[in-house]
Image (cartoon, rainbow, N blue to C red; front, side):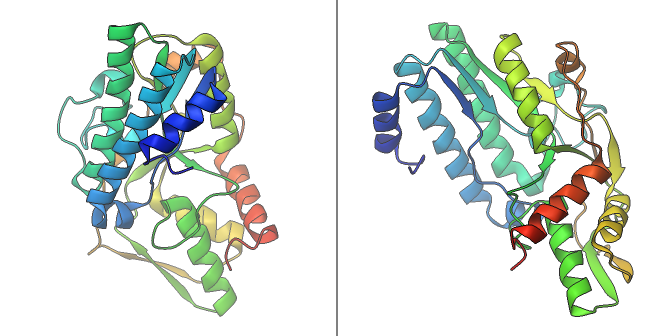
Length: 272
């Protein structure tokens, strides 16, 4: 089903009448894709959100959970980022299109809630990774891109890997299995208007992440950082205290998660 096509979305909801919807669909990518395809990211994500949320409202869905992204927060948001930082200042320019679309989606949930009393909620996950990820070097997020880059360098016998930026930005990562547990917690226990953060609570520099990936993939060469390329937001860690107060805690460490993701990719020929 093409979620950009309103007729197809309406037909699906009319036929299936889902009681509960977790809206996780969207066009996503890393810093290169985000910065070079701004119009695509804005249009497609905005259309998908509008079509799904409107159809759910009109077809009697009991509860809908819309997934945004930590990218919606300002470039220089106070750290750790509390939900109240939303729209407090300017966005990161390289992912503005994607962020605006996600903000529109969560605001649409809020407006349907206020106007029609719909139990529509929104959650903002941090950087996600895990099995079935996109490992394409052009369109993927940083962690799967690093796995692919280091794996290819090891296989081809290269003695160095060149990485975008300085390696100094700090990022937070969450395994998709931990996210799944969090979403079930939210569907069962959360019903507030305000969006809610979903993060691991731990941050790592891109340089340290690269070293973890190098160790997991057994790459023996050098890491070279190209500071002529953009870093993006300097620091981005979420304050997930409100979610933890509901009883949720992440279970999978970053090293463990990177290792099992790499093993999954090898077993499923994700790098070919």
